[in-house]
Image (cartoon, rainbow, N blue to C red; front, side, top):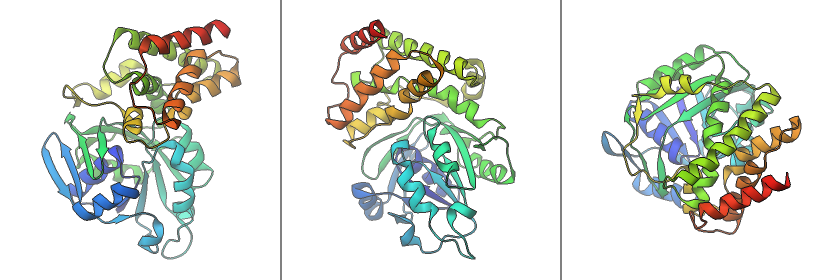
Length: 333
C-alpha cells in the first residue's frame, strides 16, 4: 500500500515520516514554501527518538503523480476549511485500471471536528474517520516535531458511516509498526465528537496564548457545557472522559514546554485562516438546530476568525477581555 499524505503539516508530516521510517511507501502533498523546503532539504522530523531527515516524493497535486494506483490510500490531513478543494482535486484523479479516486480509493479524514467526513461522504465511496491524538508542532517550512512518548500518537480508526473492514485492519497494523496506537473502532465518530469538546479551547489558546491559566480553564468549561447541552439535544453520543483516559494514559506523554496547538500554529504561520468554524462553530450549528443557546462558542468562533482574517499575532488578547465578550454575549442570549 502507498500512503499519500494530502496536507503534510504537523499531523500529516509526522504520520508520513513515521510510516516511511517503518519502510512504507509514502508521498507527501504540500504547497508553497513548505513544499519547496521538503523537496530541497527533506522532511526534518523530530520525535522522542531523535531527529531524522526523510527524503520523500513531494507533489502539489495529483497531476504530478499521473494515474493513481489501486493500492493507494489517501490520508487527508489538511484543515477542514481546505478540505473541499483537496477532496475535489484528488477525488477527480484517475486510477489505473479505470475510475476515479472518489469511486475507488479510500480517503481517511484526520481533522479536528466532525465536518470533513460529511464533506468526503458526498464525494468518496470509501470514507473513513480518524480521531487524532497527536500533539505536534509545525512552525517552519520543512520542519516538524512530535515529541510524545512512548508512542508518537493515538489514531482511532473507523468507517465514517460506522463499522470496520479489512482495510482498516491493514492500516492499523502499518501505523502500529510506525510508532502509533491505532485502535479500530465501530463508532469512530463517537470518539471524534468527544475530542471536539476539548478542541473548543483551541480558539482560547489562539487568541490569548498557549500558557495555562485558571481563567482560560473556566472559559473552556463554559464552552464545553454548551457543547454537551447541544449534544444532548441532538442525541449525539460521545466517548466518556474515562474511556479517553484509558485509551491515552501512559501511551502519549507530552514533554513540558510544548508550543501551542493547531489553531495557535495557524496564526503563528500567518495562514490567514483558522478552523474555528468547524470546532466552536459546530456547537453553534447544533445549538441553532436544536434550540440550545451557545453564546460562549459563538464568541470564541468570532474572535478566532478576526485574528485569522486580520493577521493578528496569536495570544494578543487578554483572557479577561475574551471572557468579558463571552459574558456580554451570554447576557444578550
